[in-house]
Image 1 (cartoon, one colour):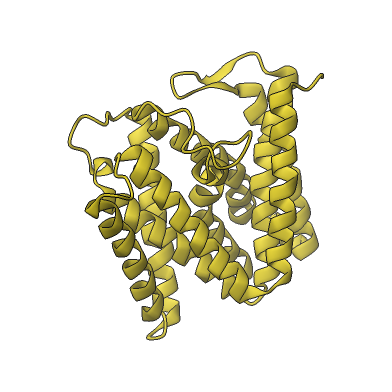
Image 2 (tube, one colour):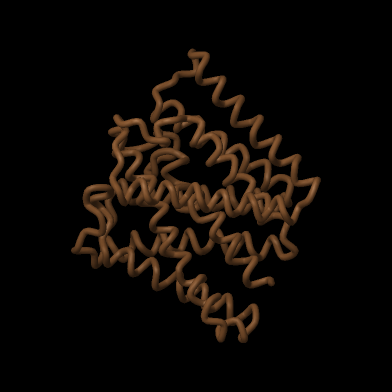
Length: 277
């Protein structure tokens, strides 16, 4: 398979991003949490500017950014009251928001009609809950192992879907939303991520492989990662965007790069809670 210049740029950018991720990981939990909050803030910036057309010169832009920071910090502080109840509530609410986005894609909502997705406040709360789901992940006993595993699932699913799709892809997965994604690519991403998940469960405790509920939940995670990619593509198409920005060469914006990661986080935390229960 001969790589085009755009593919080479995409691979180089991905390598640089991975090096930055490894650097942040080496700095510890607080640096990781702060970095993810900044990423969520950048993603919200892209949504406000390119989905809702609010520039930094407008009062509305700074108002929504301030609301995002306030909600995130306020809800973060609430965890001090009762962390167990707080964390369970965050995960459930965040999964509900992701399911709402998925249903919006499946029912092909339009931006012109008065749907909840047309309200910037929805995206503000959604990204705040995703950030807080990440906080729950970092508060787990084996947080570094879980975080590494989460990143690997997203990367393996996305990367192998791209590689397999480039080599063997023929049948379109959802052409109305993402014309370049293929069924063969999606199956390839799911297969290789599935191997990773089974290997993790075996390494964690071989008895977990006998738990059908945990095994099926784990194998469903790559499907959710693919859904997250499609959901992001759908809402970009809805506002006639190809990329959420041009900040990452070969990838577009941070929302483009983090699409499946953001969608997957609450479901992954739910899965790890099952494994560790």
